Length: 359
Image (cartoon, rainbow, N blue to C red):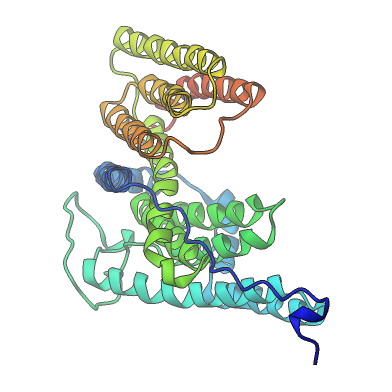
């Protein structure tokens, strides 16, 4: 038996896996407030949206909704994970095997969490809702289990885990999960708030199984911070689509203010590029991105969305302020794309305003 002194180097001791980055407490708390506030905003318009859907004939897309329901079915999701597991064994791909097992575990855990929430909250399904009241109370009765959406939460949880095996095509499972969530709304199976709630729960559970389970708290906090902007985006989309412009002059003023905020963010980014990569420069870059985000929120001219977007910007700034040694900023070309995207987003908001008004 050879000893390390016989000319062979001793094997290096295994290094412990570093814990995932944990967002600062203020950022997590603010992100949680953003999500809660978004739910409150969605619950305010859930029933009017339901009435709007009931007043239109959606038979043309009903078949797509049926396909979305089948895709988000538990049996289909288990079959997808099992197929990946079998393929991984045949091709001897340990990454695929690990991902498949994690997706099965995430699916099982999210099912337990969601079903517990469903019966603890007891929100009636759309077909059983006939008034503007909330009617929420713990219940084990059939039909009083609308929040959160089980199909959406399971699909997002599985998609979050599977995305790590598809680094170049990670958008595919999330796009399919989005289709499942949308189908739950237009089929009348769930309210928009139910679907967004399922998305949040599914993403947090899936993110926990994407990392070491012993760091589940850090993974959940990181997932909450990451999903908060998506929740605000969806909330703003529903509000913009369903509300007409009440005061054109006031609306124009807020849109102009939004454009100015986006341009101010771009100027701040250009100035930050001339500084060395210090904590101040990183904070300036995050502030410039937050200004662009705030500009898009301002352009909606909806106080609820403006407040949520502002709170989200503060959460992002709090995260940057507590971690001044974060990675370098995006390139000028990438930031230019952000600017163009923000301006296009503001333009799109104007076309979407009141497109399907509730009244």
